[in-house]
Length: 273
Image 1 (cartoon, rainbow, N blue to C red):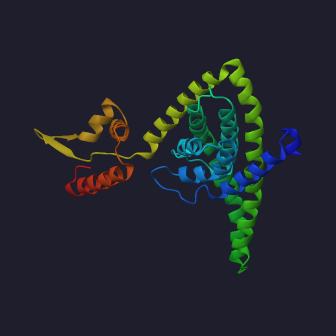
Image 2: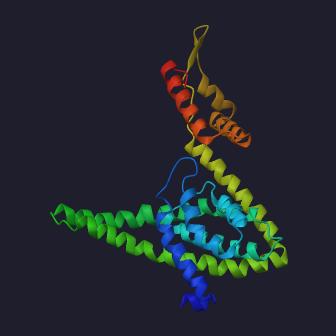
Image 3: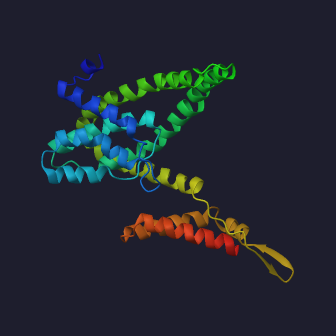
């Protein structure tokens, strides 16, 4: 039914099924450098191999998707479908702005994560776990199995159809957007949203405080309170910008993380962090 709705060919259908099954592994290589980035690359391989025949183009496309990505896995299938549609258009149009592919992808991961976490982690998982736990409390060994079956049954449909909807909507929408010149505006808006998402992540996920208290003429001066009065979140922001600057100059993420760990431990021992 969905195949006919979006006028998908047999080749499209075959490719999207491969993409769908590969989305199951998107968090299997989760790490703190690119999070789900490697899983996303693996998911996009069938798309890249189909639309890009030149090995050099394939290599460029793989690198394009090997960037930081993190969203609720159940909701991420829509984004992979949309990325597939954009790769298709890029392979046909030499003037297509390929940077927009990653820009749109990054701009969607935050909002989709918010929706997906609320629905699947905050509601569906709690309900199915409650059912499974109530069975397990009576000594029924099927409690855990029931929980997993119910949760994955609910999660299956948005993951499966999201791949097709993202690709079907993307193919027609992107073509119209390019022809009308709207694609540039979408890319700019997506970039702004992406920057807002990164800014919010910096504020909520990066923790950097200075608990040092100085005594000046009998008065206590809390360094962290002083910095917060100037600009709340100043230290996390400066730390993030410093890491970003280092990456821009060719710094290695793994060495940067090791350095931060060493500085954090040393600072905690000395008492300044």
